[in-house]
Image (cartoon, rainbow, N blue to C red; front, side, top):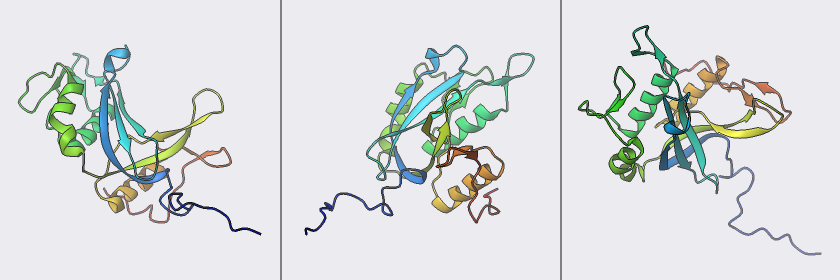
Length: 194
C-alpha cells in the first residue's frame, strides 16, 4: 500500500481554487474593439487576472447608447456600466452628448485603448478589485461559458450585497450544475448597497 501523491502547489477544492463567484482580480490589459462592430457604440474588453485561476478572465463593457430624438445620448445601461468602470479605474472623462469619448478637459480621445494604457494601467497594476464570475448559457445551443458581470467592486462585502441585489432582480442568470438558469441569492440578499 502506498500513500497518495498530492504536491503542495495543487490547491484543495475548498481552498483558493474557486474560480466562480466573487473573486479578487487585477486589471492587466484593455482592448477597445468598438470599431469591429457596427452595432456597438462601445465595446471594451478588460483582461482580469485572479490568484484563484491560472487563466485570465475577460470583462466586457459593451452596447449601444439610447438616444434622444435629436441624436444626443441619454441615460442608459451602457452609460451606467461605462461610468461604473471609469470610476473604478479613475478615468475622469467619458462620452460627450454625441457619444464621442473625451478626457476630463473635454478633449476628444482619438485612441481610447492607448489612453487607458498610457494613463491608467500602471496605477492599476497593484490594485485589487472584486469581480463576479459565473456560468451563463449560450444564446444558441447548450454550451455554457464563464462570464464576468461588467462591474468591479473595491470592497468585497459591499460588492457581495450588490451582486445579491442583481440576482434578486433576476439581472444575473446563472447556470446551475443541473443546467437550470436561475437567480441564486445568498442569505444576505436584503442588504443591497443602495
